Image 1 (tube, helix red, strand yellow):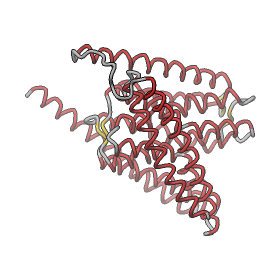
Image 2 (cartoon, helix red, strand yellow; image 1 turned 90 degrees about the vertical axis):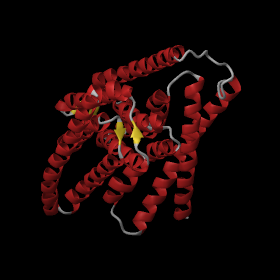
Image 3 (tube, one colour; image 1 turned 60 degrees about the vertical axis):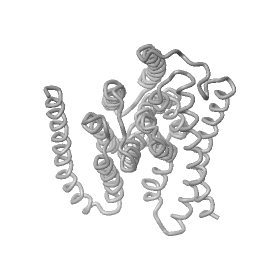
Image 4 (cartoon, one colour; image 1 turned 30 degrees about the vertical axis):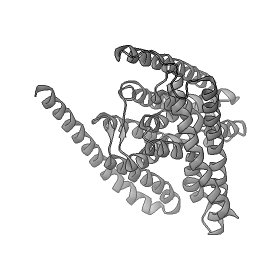
Length: 362
């Protein structure tokens, strides 16, 4: 029965992501919004809804580690796993807006969380500031997108058409229904997949900790995985990348912010999260800068690099619990691998800058 539910969960996830991407891309044209902004807002926030519910429930139940770990783990997985696997399938084009504003904002907010968490707590005032920041970000993104789309039409000398497919009232309602149905199917499919996978893993004798850091951690991000991969396959690459960056922004400002406001005492942060997971989240955000910058394309080898580091991150958590001695050796290997990766990324940036200079002088 669990195998049947697992299979049905995957099918529903696939169909849900297809509905969500198709409805979102059509609404983008109907409302004069770019696919990037739809990916950064509607799609990203919708696929992050399960994280919001889990974090609010956790803080109200006094499980602060779950709430904070949910944000950190989701942000790390969004970049390393989801962007990685999407780029391996199809190299992803990165828009100028992401490089100039949204990505630096993600890096800045990651650093801000480190500052807020310096006293081992995200209090209600911190959460209120983050929540206000989310409202400002959404408002600014929508207004800016509509203005840019209007300017683009003027520059192209094209008049606004009223007969565009998907722009009528009936088509708009159908696209909204399609988008909402996709979101609902993503939540249902991911829940069926997680529950079934946990049952199967327990029958196979896998420990609950391993289940938590692998199956459950992956399962809670399945909506983002399914949406970004499907968007990449369908050629909606702005939605694929925007979904990841937007989800990370929503996790920080929305999930962490709202959870901190709802909780009577804010969110207490454990020393282990401050010492390991939070620095990893910041490092992952910073690593996006050179990857996104070089040619505004996330290539297949860069996607493979992200995937490698994600599996290394999960493996480090598993080893730290199961074998402390092996954990020291693994940490040493990572201390060697990380600087080499940084050098490789810097070399790619320098090569890109030089090629651009040659092209400009040619």
